[in-house]
Length: 369
Image: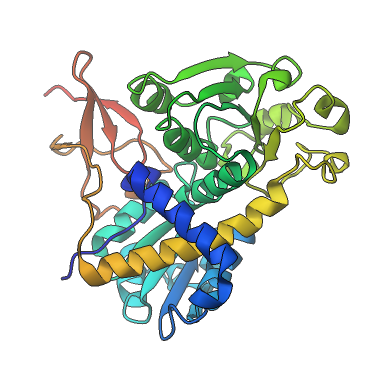
């Protein structure tokens, strides 16, 4: 089997590669006709086991504007998984029909699992509450075009920081650039996961603080990244109902913000940004949607070129540890459903003997026998 390039996590791309993708996207924006036949004869399969409007249509529009074609499905009910087919078999089958696959799935780690069996490049279009790397690429292009840089920014991230896959990927990307400072705005129940705190922010010496209200920090921000409280990520509906309207940005609160601050949102929004903010020139979330298409065009071109050449950096993967018959205990992990998958764990904290599942980042302690 030929060597393939996948995008499962934003860490799969070097900082230089991210900058290169942004440069390509900016060139596409300026010279649309130049790329109109770049993927002629190529097909993308969009496999969405979870509902989506923007991400699925963005991938399809990206391929169409490159001169290619699309196929796929918009919900799990339209696939053979309703008959009991595994994700692994679905991926292997679809690889016979398409040149590249974009997949969204509610189970954490599903995209990584899919990449192990796929015969074409796989792009993670969101795996549960884990990662959403192409949304991060759209976010970065938006910030770069708005501020002219990706470094030395004060970035407020507001809402669901615990389950928000876009949040985890954005922190991972922006913490690579020098001088960025993060303000994490959330209720105590929805703060960033420990793996983001201890394995991304701390090793990079990234500066960050926590804040409980938008009003207390908005005046200092260059970027405010709003997120919705995601009902589909909560196992306890009462907890969701209690937290769902924790943060609402409106025109009154925007009066305290810098004149050149940017408001981003991965969408869909519910009530967390009032419509009276939409006409503010600092509201960038609808431009963000268009930028996402251009970044996905650039990504498709890169992954197909890398698959053709076989020349690209190996993704950063931690050394795996065999924990015997131990299985990940996270019910939202892909291994909880796809039980034939090989369990993969990596050592994260040797002092305390802490390991994490490579699919979903769930922390485990090495079992004693």
